[in-house]
Length: 178
Image 1 (cartoon, one colour):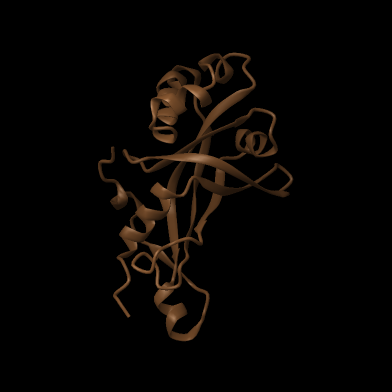
Image 2 (image 1 turned 30 degrees about the vertical axis):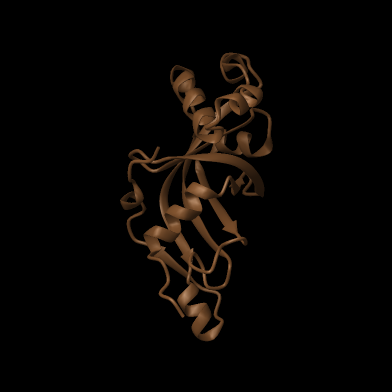
């Protein structure tokens, strides 16, 4: 069997090629809530994921009252050189916040540029900035990655134990990207 890609390669592949993350938040009473959102990765310090949601969505309200968030990214369509079992996944933890209005225009442009690289497709999907500011119904949110774990594929291949490996410095994954 070929060697596994490095942890950094695997984490980078997952975060740059998956389009959806399942976020876990909790309300002020501690009741959990999971939501799947379409994100883009910002590979500038600090390592962040950005998405938008309706302001009244449960996870958005939870973020407004508590910033701790966890998430899971998973792919089941990987080639053998990416994963000997055809799948891979990661879990992460960090803090989330609504993007303040003065930052919204820049995040709006970057989110749509990264999510829809083709300009024609981008124009079809891009919502007006006013949707994300003032009394608009949506907001951009960012999750700053503080901890990150990968599926321990080597362990799985050895003894079929479903375990995780922590990436000691997720910020080391920061590299320039197009």
